[in-house]
Structure formats: structure tokens, C-alpha cells
Length: 201
Image (cartoon, rainbow, N blue to C red; front, side):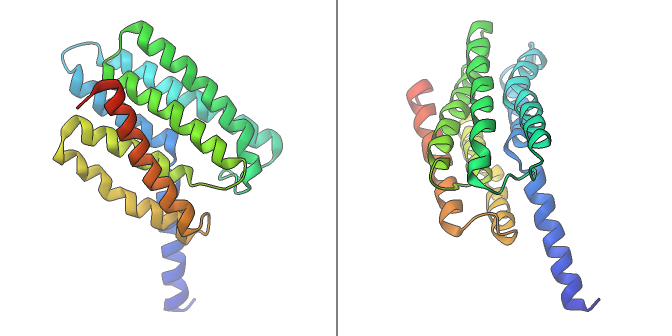
């Protein structure tokens, strides 16, 4: 193996690793943990974190994995049309999550972010009917916006991983630049708009 080939292999492996760990349901886990712990560090943050993570991560991962196995698909579901049914199941989980969090009296930001996940995924579903917008890009930019809302300027630190995620998806040829730019832009703008409407500045 030549140095050039080794370098390409390492780069592809790195891109695959970044792409895997930045899967939106996985990204949501530390984000909700940080938000709930910050807002409820002396309260029942673990309970609200469990509720959040169950509906935003665990249930979507289970349903999507079962669908992938049943239909013998790639984990990334590279074909646009393969996304539709799993997205519908994810949306259903988010709907229930929103209801449960509001009923349980979760912190406003926690409930609002779940609403953002619901609405942003509805937008992804609409796009997926005719175009393969990047779920990864949207799924990293949305939580990044929530952390900026919570922490202010220090919250921008999380946004440093956004270019890495975009690069990984581009390097793996999962998306075009336009699909990645659109996903990132909508992730930031839609989440910011919803948080403003739901919570104010």
C-alpha cells in the first residue's frame, strides 16, 4: 500500500467515524443531557433526560434499525425514497415526546427543542419527497443553535464540529454541497426561529 493509498484510507475511515457518531439521534443524547443538567443540576435532571433521550434517540434508533434490517438497507439509507417510512416513525416518536415532556413539566428549553426536532424532521420529510437534503447537517446545526441559546457565545464551541460533519458527508459522497449547505442553514435558522417563538430571547 502506497503512502497516498494509506492516506486516502485513513481519511475515509475518519470521515466514516465522524459520520457515524454525528448521526442525529446520537448527537441528541449529550445535547439533552447538557441542557437538562444545566437547567436542573440540583433537581430531577436525570428523569427528564431519560424522557427526552427515549423519544428523541432510543425509540427512533430502534424503529429505524428494525426497518433497515427488515428491508436489507444500508444504515445510511442512501436512496432518498428509503427514508420516507422511517422518518414517519421518527416523527410519531417526536409527537409523543412533545406531549410527554409538556405534560411532565420538563424545562421549557427541553420541550421546545423536542418541538424543534419534530418540526425540523417534518421539513426533512417534505424535502425527501423530491430531494435528498442532509439529515446529518440539519441534525447537528439544530442542537448547536439550542446550545447557543442556552450558553450564549460559549455555546458556539459546539458549532466547531459542524464543518467536520459537513466534510465527512461530502467526502463519503453521501450528499452534494447544495444538500449540505441547505441542511446546515435550515438547521440553524429554523431552530432559532422556533426557539424565539416558543421562548423569546
